[in-house]
Length: 511
Image 1 (cartoon, rainbow, N blue to C red):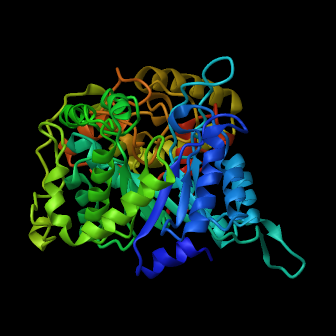
Image 2 (cartoon, rainbow, N blue to C red; image 1 turned 45 degrees about the vertical axis):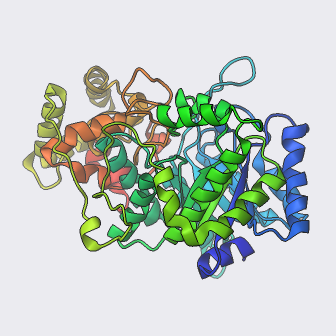
Image 3 (tube, rainbow, N blue to C red; image 1 turned 30 degrees about the horizontal axis):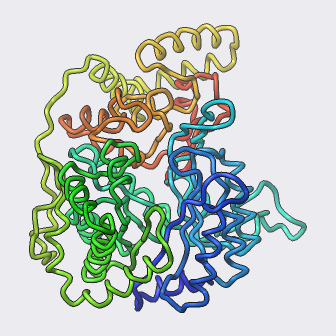
């Protein structure tokens, strides 16, 4: 078992990870500095417990984190390897996970991944075969020994050798509206149910949003460890983030103005931003979080050293720094009542819901009525549908005619991609395969900005739309259900028939 994991589980020490973005190519400064930093950590005794290494951040190609993690391990430095769903199908995930396990690299940060924006001779094709909740469940099943078909000579069911992954994942609490935050917590629920071992929120500079995650875990009686996230924000990085060019990260105009003023100093604001990072880290210590995820562009070992040591010094006075981190957006929604004294009393752990404005949608109304009367098990409509598709299953010619008609209807109403394993009911009768750039079937990714899609800023996030449809009808229960991965063996086949005959994911044992 890794020291990183042991110390998190013990809960006696404040854990620190430092994130690195190694960049493109097999060599170069952005690659070599990761190894050099690790060597300094090993020699110094500074309490840095793991180096967090990104996986194609920002949707750009970069050297894979696995090889750097292996080099760091040879120097007795642990890593937190990012494991992005953006560019791997499930078979590639298993192959990569098996390789990590063989190398003894067990600390993994599972993320949805950024939508590709670059690549060889054009932009790469996104994959997103599994979402992060599904990937966590997959890796946890590998930990238990993934079942294989058949039995051995002794009659014991076959299974892969057990792995021993310690799985971290994220949550993005910095969404402006109720729909964004609610659906983020829905996906967090699914990750926790899948067995995630550590939660690291997206980065931001509104401490109340970090507290929202802590309150949510307390409200739901979850005991999963929680880190804080602290990025040392320079003026150039702030300008990029302020424009929304880093998915899921919020830097308000007010914060940017503060950094612009600080940049006028002789050191271009470096001391101010290092102190700000130390203050935020001290707040995380004071709040009782299990650790902090530190990052920043161009930081040297001495910069991390200053942040860590200075945060230790000022932690006894951590409450005095809380007002320095109130950079929220105008009219922003918070899931829980304000608690300036951070008491975490029971009355501060009761969610506050704004009334959802009812949206008129003929498509949604008809879809919901049809589901209730035809696609709900136990109804006469369901019994008739099941009988019809049993009949059509034995008559291929009629089945093809039926499928042609179904395809035209679903293309017109839902822009159907004919996956054959439909999840419309779980996303407010919106198709996650055609209308979500990342095909997220269990909740939103962390890249939306003011409710708009990361990959297409002109489109509203499908999960925000689903919330807008379901909340006024008090039908949010449907999005709380875990949806397994698509079975692509059913592609280009009747999803209605697959549903009635129990061939799609609804026919599998419920998770």
